[in-house]
Image (cartoon, rainbow, N blue to C red):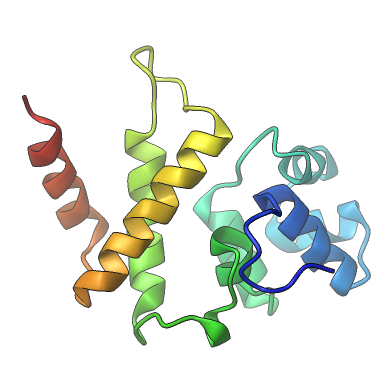
Length: 144
């Protein structure tokens, strides 16, 4: 098993690791997240990225969502006590902004890098922003 903070594991691999740790089948784990088994399979294969509701449901069942999304445990990170707000704002922002000209989501690796960048940037500021404030900042940044 990889150590916490090991970015050599993709989101899908970390998700599978979490499911294995709980000794659940894909169907059982999918049920925790409120999705079908086929969606769970696609998440674990890094073919699709789950939405925020899925992650929040897993968190309600004790899954370390910080590890799934960031590759490091919330208990082992230097994030502020309100780090959940930072991650939620970053996740929502990536979901909205990480799209190509046709409106399709960018490839998983690019969205993951963007998410990591946003979380690192927001963690350094020490002041979690709402997703609305973060979007407004990004829109100003992206204007020519």
